[in-house]
Length: 522
Image (cartoon, rainbow, N blue to C red; front, side):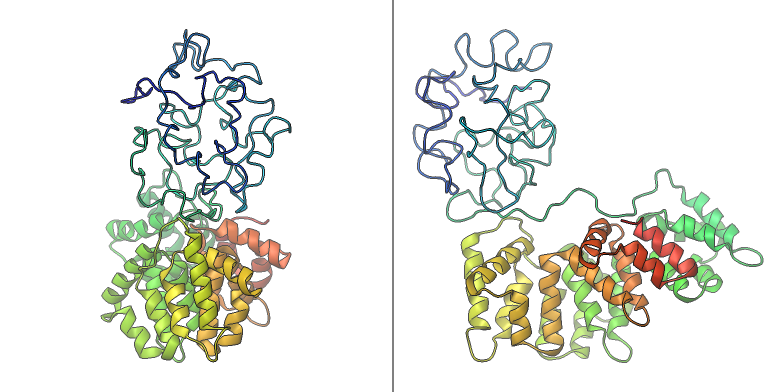
C-alpha cells in the first residue's frame, strides 16, 4: 500500500549531512538530535519538532543510492519475501548489538533513553515486534504501511501511550498527515513543548473483568434451564448459580424478554418467589443492566432512614461521564424525579455540592496532562487549605470534580512534592464529617480505583457482620470492569485473597454465586 508523497520527493531521513547511509558522526545523532539528550523532552533546538533543515528532509538522500537501506532489490515495499534482511549489527538498521533502550514511560523520567547508546549494553526491545526496523524475524513497527504488530502501542517502550495512537509511529496504519510539519493530526494531544508532558496513565492491560460474554449463549435455551430449575417442588439453586454466574450482564438481561416470550411469565417475579435471603438479593442485582443497577442503588441509598453517603460517593466518583448520564436518565424514568433533586433534598452544605458536581457527569476526560497546569492546581489546593485559616471548600470541589483523572493524579503528585504531605492527610486536617469522607473517597478513587474498591470490600467484610449490600454492589458492578485488578490490590494490601475472605464470610448458595463472580483465588 503506498502513501501519497512517501517517500518524500527528493528528501531524506534522517537529515544528517552526507545522506543515508549516514557518514561517521551522523548516527547516533549528536547532541540535539533524536533521541533527545537527558532533559530533552520538551526537546532542545534541533530536536523534534523539526527545525528548519531538519525533517522535511534535504534533497539527495532518500531514496537511498545503491548500497543504502533498504537494499534496492527487494526494497520497500518488500518484494516477495517480506522485509529486507537485517544489516549487520553496527550498521544502520541492525542497530548496536542488543537492540535499543526503552523510553521508560513507566516512570515520569526518561532513564535509559540513551544511556545505552554505543558504549553501553542496551535493554532488549520489550515487546515482540518492537525491535528497530530490520531485526530478523520482526515486522517493522513504525514504518508507514506495515500495520503495526501491536496496535495499542504507539509509544516506543512497553508503556501504553498517553494519547491516541499517532499515525505512522508504532500504531495506526494511517495516511501520513504529519509529513512535513502539518498541524498535529490529533488536536487533543498538545504538541510536545510548552510543558505538556503526558504522564503515563495507569497501565490498562485490556479486559480486566472476571465475567465475559459466554460464547454462543442462546437466551431461549438458557430460560428453559431456569424454568426447569424453578418448576415443581423445590428449586435447583445450583443450576441457577451455574447459569447466571457464567453469563455477562447483557446476556442476563436478555433472559428477561426470552422468559416472557417462552412462558408468558415474569422471570424476576419467579426468581423472587423461589429464592430468599442474600442469595435472592444477589440474583436480583445480577438481573439488572449496569446503569439500571446503579440507579436503583442510588435510590435506595437516598430513601429510607439515613442516607448511605458512602454508596453515593462510590458510584458517582467511579463511573465515566457516559455512565453517569445514563444513570441520571434511568433514575428520572424510574423515580419520576431527577437524581439531583433527590440529592438536594437529602443532603446539605458542601457535601451536597460535592455530590451534585459529581452527578453532572461532565468531568474532563482527556488523557493528556499538562504539568504546568497540574502545578498551578496543586498550588491552588494548598492555598485553599493548608495555607490559610479556614478552608475554601469550593476550590477543592472545583478541582476534584472537573479535572480529568490523569491530570488529578499529576496534581496529587505535585501537591505531595510541594508541601511534603499527602492530599488525603490535608483533607483530614481541613475537613470533617460527610464532606471529609466524601472528598477522601473521591481522591482515593481517582488515585487508584482498584485499591479503593479493595478497601471498600475489606471494610464490608471485616468485623462482626457483613455489609452485604456493599459486597453485592461491588462484586456485581466491577465483575466486568476491573475485578482482576481489585483482587490483586486486595492481596497486596491485606495479605489474603479476596476469594478466601468471601469464603470465610458468607455461606450457602450466596457464597457459591459470589465466588463465581470473583472468578478464582489468587
